[in-house]
Image 1: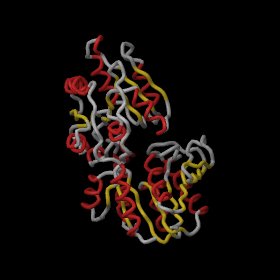
Image 2 (image 1 turned 180 degrees about the vertical axis):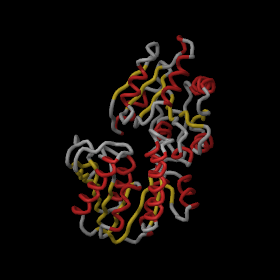
Image 3 (image 1 turned 90 degrees about the horizontal axis):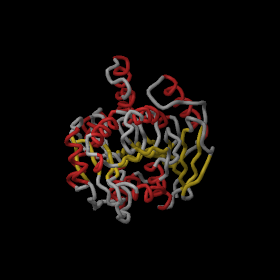
Image 4 (image 1 turned 135 degrees about the vertical axis):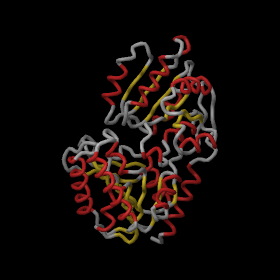
Length: 359
């Protein structure tokens, strides 16, 4: 049995990918603990999920986003982890902001888990900022340099693995798929859902414009579950569409998914076309929805459309094409899909990567 430490710079409350992979390792017989960052200092200092201990570090209030205080808070968090973790058999670093630990913690083997293109987030709010472009470029260069210190690298998308390979780094894609679930009955009214982090406003504005253009007696309902840096901005946007049936609530857990999926007919998974999406990010909500039989609407001009349509998990829509979005809502309404490739294959691939590390 190996001692494994996973590190993630969110509160893991929960982080489905982090928990899922830790559970796979634990079920395989390893001793696993997760070190997480309680940025807003509003979570339990420790908790347990499936026998896995989550240790949350507090180093001062640290906002999400590409700010100086965010960067400084993450450095303090990494220092706190370094002080509390002794020698381990495997250090599992989730995302690029944990990579400095590869060379500061005494670990027999190291695994870098690239969830997304971390350097693109600093550009989210101000993509044309000259200073932020410089910072993003330095973050990218640092990530590629540090990733080469890892004994093995995995990603959340085959397209990210291709991106890394173009930069000289081999990796294995482990997608965020879940186990196939029961196909639930559809709600009586056509309902579109979005479950997850609220990081932008533009995609919701496009959806609301599409809903507004649909005849009132045929107009779908929209349910948004989640929180994030743009939550208040989306709530302000909702107030501009008093004629739409929109329901918003905060955080949820994956134990809530069956109930939440029973409330919707279609999952909305479109995002502004920034580098992270264009390079191959795959919204996990598409797989989660398909596991319960729900189709998704995704970006047409992005790699996710290839998986969505090849596996018949929904349809893609060109960004900004309101008419196409309206037509797609009509086409997908009442239809079910099947997640033919679920979590089991991803688990096998992941455990093979770990076995090859010989910890």
